[in-house]
Image (cartoon, rainbow, N blue to C red):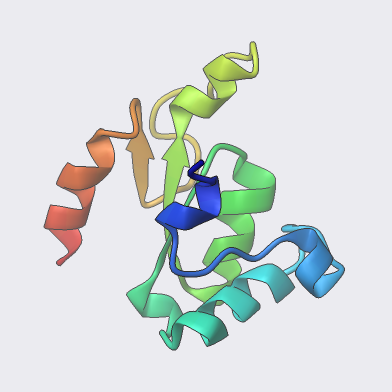
Length: 102
């Protein structure tokens, strides 16, 4: 059986750093384990406060996953107001975004 972590080089949870994503600790651990600088990474998340804003503090590129809010039964923020560098309507949009930043 495939698990979600089978699709990623590094998986960091709050349990690994004993802090939530509003702390920069999980992001710093992931960057360290990947061996990359913040400007070489992008955070894709569906919560502006914990995902986008925290990643921006470290200098990561950010991508607001608007579809995540819909799946949680909420309305996403108005387009262009998340503060993220990019916004996704669907995870497949990520392919075009990565082409733009390469």
